[in-house]
Image (cartoon, rainbow, N blue to C red; front, side):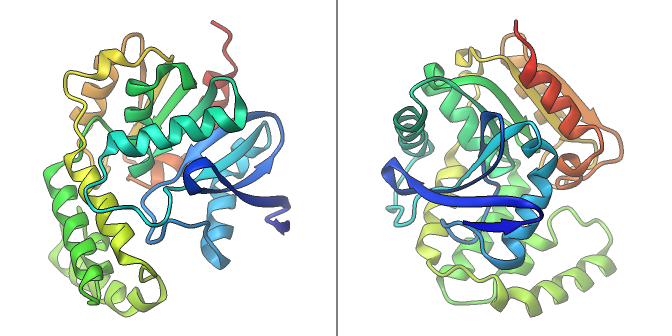
Length: 270
């Protein structure tokens, strides 16, 4: 156990080898992590950043930050990943739990809720949607294939959605320099998950999600168009949608309204 940002952080491994950290107090909230270079618990500044981002929710919930399992086989599908999560969460908690999926974790969360509705009590999807946009799919695949080939890769994702050519070149150069600091330790895991998310598409399946659902997105999300957020919410029976004005992909989860709205939604009794 370590103390990070004032929280006692414990870590462990769920069934099927899913690594997690836990912090805060209250009803369990399973946070399915965004895209990460490794299928592992974050360390150093990455752990501090994660705890800081989730801290407003950890004041009222016991946050379980769960990642995909290491050693992911080539050809693994999102349905396979969701099945492992469903079995692991049921083994750990034995009751339906609240699930928050952010970015790539939202893809996992949506598949989980559609395929295994008995596991999810309430569902929050943030900066994510029923499928990847073509531009996001392309940038993720370029990143993963470059990393698997042992090449610098971070710039492929860091420049996603930047309209200014000058800014894109600057950000790309900085990402190219920073790449060795965050390079995947097992790029085969990264590539396997990216290919699973490439094929992820819940068109025609959203109505299978029965858990009360809140979809949150940013108006200026670099990876998802507003229409994707709306389609996702419209397809899930009774889902609520919030789009924050003038807000980016990461900005949505750091928005001042994010934690209070998630707290309010998860505490509802109906």
